[in-house]
Image (cartoon, rainbow over all chains, first blue to last red; front, side, top):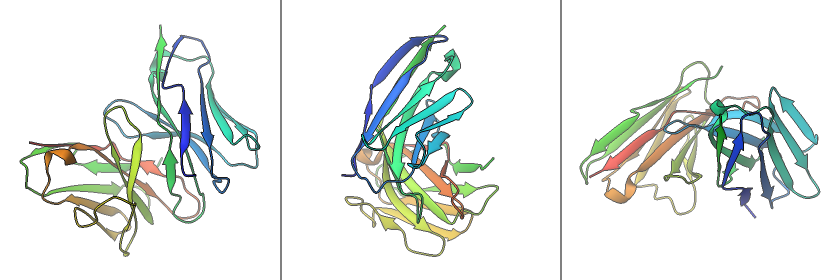
Length: 113
Length: 115
């Protein structure tokens, strides 16, 4: 019930492409869904987050789509650049209280020039 | 933006020694701090959650006598790996969260290598 399943494990796109990373959760009590970007040897950095009362959120080139009935959410990166090459983690948790997060398994994205 | 500093970034020590890792929130008061462990090419696994002035809450399977966590102030939490052994080698990452719905902000991690 606490798992967050993330796919694909790795992804290669050309510059300008739109990589899509998908996540699925089981616990319907989750009410906070962030995405993090991690470069090698660094900690994760928050990219964008969504709550279940909206179906889509955009921040710059990053868009989250959220499907509450399917318990799925995805990250789209518009006009991807080589600098976007990193590992992306989705997470799910509770926005109240301590905000404990359960992380997906990660997607290694490579954007080729 | 919110900055979390973690120190040291890399430590190598002999088996049997204890190692302390510091996590500081530089520009906000961290009411809650989290400690994660990450193996190469794997996800982040939550080890424990701590609130300032309270005992840490450990996740199932994490030895609290092995991984001592202290959150003595609103800007500092420490993780001490006691009597470290090679299997404790990993990337340890802290995160901090302020009050009023702020998201978690992560430090840059500490790579611990036990020889």
